[in-house]
Length: 370
Image (tube, rainbow, N blue to C red; front, side, top):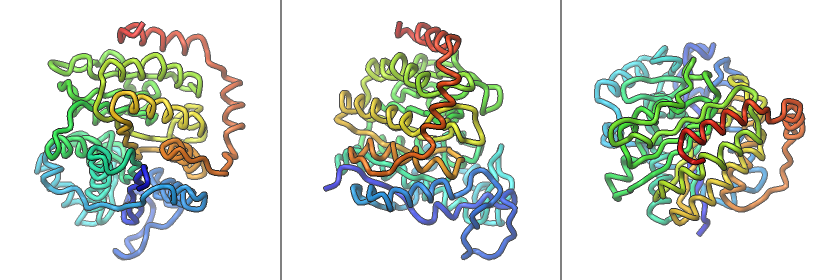
């Protein structure tokens, strides 16, 4: 049995941003064209899947689809009135829905499938069918509030998966690490008053939601201390992220001792992304995955699930994703990243500035890890 499951489904590539993609309604059986104008196009994900295939890495994993999340699954997070409105707009052909969250025809059903992929990944890893898993979920989920679509996200994929595993199998303590360049506000909101899920978000300071940093938002009630935000200044690169990881993220995991680790894996902190201003390259994501995998092996028998979130550079997301999956599987391909040296040169020109390090040191002390 292969140790890594790869969850994906062709329908997820067919989610459309509708009116905002600059396309005409041409029928329900016509795939969204490449080059659609909206940032959240299918191509970053399709190209990642294709690179996994042609590199031979897909053969090292069990490639699976899954059933869509059920109404019961969704209702643990989302109220019925929200789901009804989402379906209504989707059935009507799509349009504006929420904050920066346009949809197209069929987006409701595709979002349920996207959440279902995350649910299956968590279930198959928690029950021991696989050591770890990658869910190529689209649309993403980490910005979605229980009753508010936001930032290309319509269902809270990871919380839906966590709550299903809790209900079905008694899953206990979970760490969610969100290294998407934008703050994981949806996950934070859902678990803000709970102590069974430790939410950690590394994000570009004040990027999205606009103006948000969140370093003093630590949770409330039972959840106080179980929410950690690490806002990093624009321009941070490989060294800054690893410094934050080693000084805050890993100590937090060691202290919490989870039964499972789930990563909200956005690639938009890469140095070529059009929606952010960070300087990560493929080896940055590889190293964060390695450290996370080590923490999972230390605390929860290696139970690690990666759920795809953002990342909008069609030419570069595939190389970052390949690095993550190589680390998950333990299999290195012959693929060479054509952009890593260029981004690394940019980062070296900027260097790991003292003010960046000082910011992380201040956060480390504030969170009690120093």
